[in-house]
Amino acid sequence: MVGAVSLAHLPAELPSPEAAGAAAHPGLLPEALDCLRVAVSLYDEDMHLVYLNRHFHFIFRQMPPPSALIGRSYAELTRIELASGEIDPNSFVESEDRYVAM
Image (cartoon, rainbow, N blue to C red; front, side):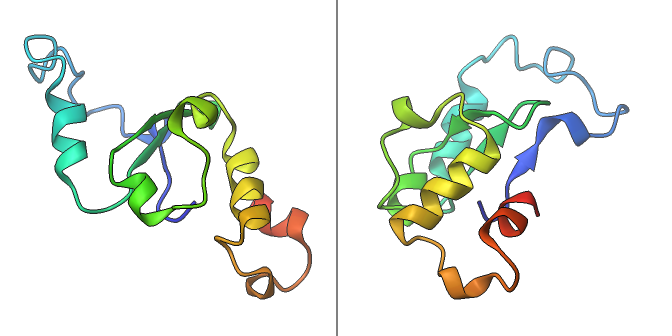
């Protein structure tokens, strides 16, 4: 997925969500991400999807609903994109497996 972010790679010196006030406003981050006019997908340290914002399906119209995507790996989601035609098969030079591994 274009622009995927792994939460595991954030620098250690960033304040925790609790220290930054997220505990006092638990819905603030998802609410803010839903306002963005870009697709946002967040992954855990094992590269499994944990969050999609509302705009995700506006951009990736062929993808299944969020309930069918949450918990899937980045590689699984990339294969779904390839199968649905979201990614042009001519965009990878060697093989689908190598493209997914990137």
